[in-house]
Length: 135
Image 1 (cartoon, one colour):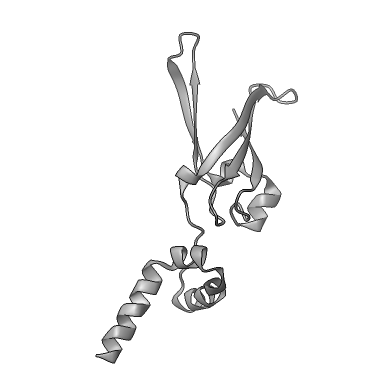
Image 2 (image 1 turned 180 degrees about the vertical axis):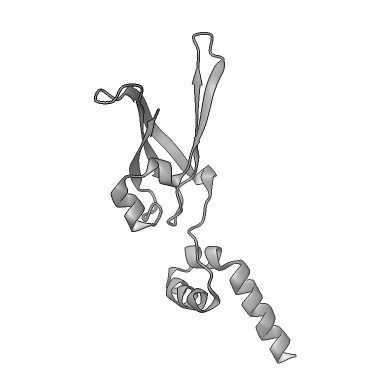
């Protein structure tokens, strides 16, 4: 019976490792160590409803023909760090009809330095500028 209870606790911790690490930061290092042994990861949570775009700007890149640069400021309104969301960009014509759409994933919108850090918005409530070059 004890073995079954320990196995169930282990499965529960494995299944909810992201949530446990988000809400109990002190559990992060032991979960990371366990995942190294199990060859898994403890990803940052993704709660897109707690992320917002505070500002955005779309401009032509002056040094490169046919390239448009999207700059945006994202705010993490969660009480925990979380991963960057994918962004959907939809361009419309003069009649406000969509004519082009793109999905921008984390690798497409972060600066080289932020990609090297390989983490999300580290601090709750923090703003982070992102940029994407579109051609």
